[in-house]
Length: 328
Image (tube, rainbow, N blue to C red; front, side, top):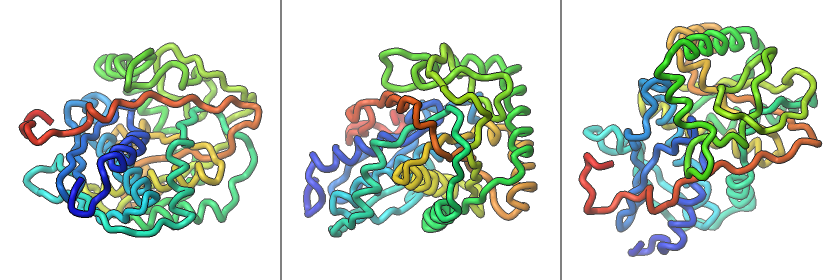
């Protein structure tokens, strides 16, 4: 890049870190365009999940997480991002435009960036060691900085009911089952959820993981899951709010990782509109729209560290100037 912006190697390194963001089914639904003085994020509708995510809420959240990962990476490299969300109302898939200013990174900036490569989605049971209330307050503070709220869930039965209801609906939906199979159990792919990352479901699980194919990740826990449950919400439910929710989700996940906590995002309970409305009413008292539920806690000390999930090469994610809009 020219005119005082980072060199190409710096930009590529930052985009590689951005690509470590979590995404529903690990579809990685983002694309990037590099201009002379800015970096642009686009939603790739070709990677949508019509049965799982018909209104694109999950994939917009995923893109928001990638946007925040990019911001964290560039900040640690000495560049402060200025983010313009939904910069072109005529193109709602143009999610963000980012310009950069030089800024000396702090120790906290660098530590946050280190959490990008350390973070994993851990679907196993967590231990009964308590998560200190100060950590939960920190998650709330980090989310508020990005326009979202975080609330600790005390009524686990409400989430359990929503998860069970969504699971039954999805189990009866042939399109959903096919879609899940298409994105799971993969070997040698640059996307999707590999069998090595998924523990086998247990019938008595309070919040069973999705039934990804050929689950083979050992869960040594013998006790019920003791994770704390957090709900992340926004005051509105438009695309900009969902993008911000993804940014806030990324901030919470990276903060938890830096502390040493394990995390796992639950989106299935919110993928059925009726259950999402009930969670909004019962857990957020109608004041915010739930965008994600996060399990957070301490992984067993005897457990293996979750392996990395695959990521698409940067070359596949770049929009070239010669590409037409319809090709995104």
